[in-house]
Image (cartoon, rainbow, N blue to C red; front, side, top):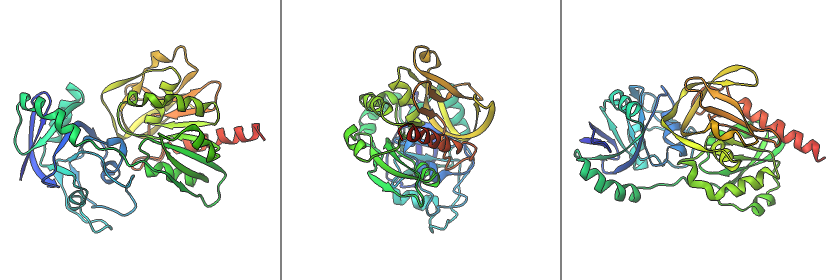
Length: 358
C-alpha cells in the first residue's frame, strides 16, 4: 500500500505503508542518525508528536526486545525508514508487528537521504502522511485540524523505585522521563520518586528528597513557563540537576533564553567538550532547542560543556547554588556511556548538602 509524506513547503515523498496502515500522522519531521536503538527512540517521550526518520538505511534488523522501552507508551506520530527488515527479537515481535500493536503508522521504501538533506537545508518542517499527495493549499487546510486531533502527551508517572542500598533519595520532576535515567539513578544507589511536573512544592517536600532531577521531555521549553517558579523554589531548597528539557528549563528559570535549532541534534555520536577537564566525550542527544549563550551574561549560570560540531551549550552550572545540567543524555539508552559520570556529580552535590546541614 502506497503512502505519501507531504511537507509544509509542498515537497512530497512516496513510500510503502507498514505498522498501522490506517493510522494518520501529522507533526514535525525530525531525523535520528543512530545506527541502532530504534526501539528506545520510538519509546522516548521527547519524540512526542514528531514523525521520526531514521537515517541509517536498515531498520528493524534485530526486532523488538523485552525491557528496552524507555516509557510505557510511544507518543511519536510515525516512523520513517529506507529499508524495513522484519527480524524477530526476544519479545517475539518484528518492528512492523510492534508498530501495528502501538497503532503507529510507518513508511518504508522512503528516500530518507533526500528527506534528511531537505530538512538540513530548509530546517525542521511540518508534515502529513496520507494516502495521496497533498497540495500546499490542502496541507494548510488539513494540518491545523489533523495535528490537534492527533496530539499526544507522555503518560506522566507518580511512582517510587527503591535501590538495593540507597544513599540518597531523588525526586524526579517528570516532563517525559526516560526509563534509562531512572535506571542510572538506581545504579548510583539512589531511591527514586517520580512526580508529575504539575506537583506542588508542598507535595514534593512531603517526599523528603535529598535532591531534585528535572527530566527530559518534548516540546519548546517556553511551553512550560508556568512551572519556572516551581523550579526556582526547588533550587532554593535542594541540589538540582537537569537533563535535556530539564537543562533548558533550569536556564529559563535563572534568566537565560532558549532558541530553536535549524534541525536539532538527534543521534548517538555527538562530541561534547567538558570545559572543566578539557576532555571530549561522545554523547546521545535528542533535542530541537538550545540555550542562548548571549543570554547568560547577567545570570549566575556558567557553561560547563559545549557541542564539538556547532559549539552550542551542552552543560551549565550555577556559581552559588548546587545546580547542574546537561543538554545531552548521560543515560544514553541507546548510545555511548561516556557521560554517566553526570549522575555521580549529582550525588556529590547531594553529599555536600547533607554534610553541610548535618
